[in-house]
Image (tube, rainbow, N blue to C red; front, side, top):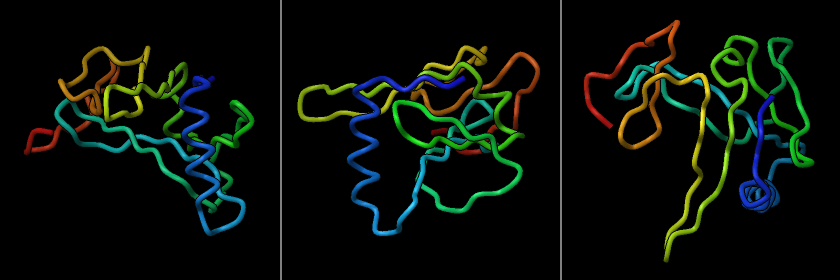
Amino acid sequence: MITISEAAAGQLKTMLAEQEIPNMFLRLGVTEGGCSGFSYAMGFDDNETDQDVYMDVQGMKVVVSKDDIRYLNGLEIDFEESGMTGGFTINNPNATATCGCGSSFRTKEDAGKPAAEPC
């Protein structure tokens, strides 16, 4: 299960509404790299496959590949505004280590493949 706060859902729904391609949805994923071994991937997509897990979160279609769900199960996404800036924050209960920028992690079972260049 993935949780998206009301603030994050509001931002994402606004961004989805601006997309020019119909039937877009939020795709969450994991790629190897970053300081700690894995990096989060979050974007809009309209390409569905039979290797995906689908869920409805805050009235949005959210898709995660079956390979990535083990890293993202329990994930919490929020949106925080800070002065003139704001951004999405991620809390991942599967992460045993994260980098300082918060966009990279590793798990107890898998260290991924850290990038040669830091974040």
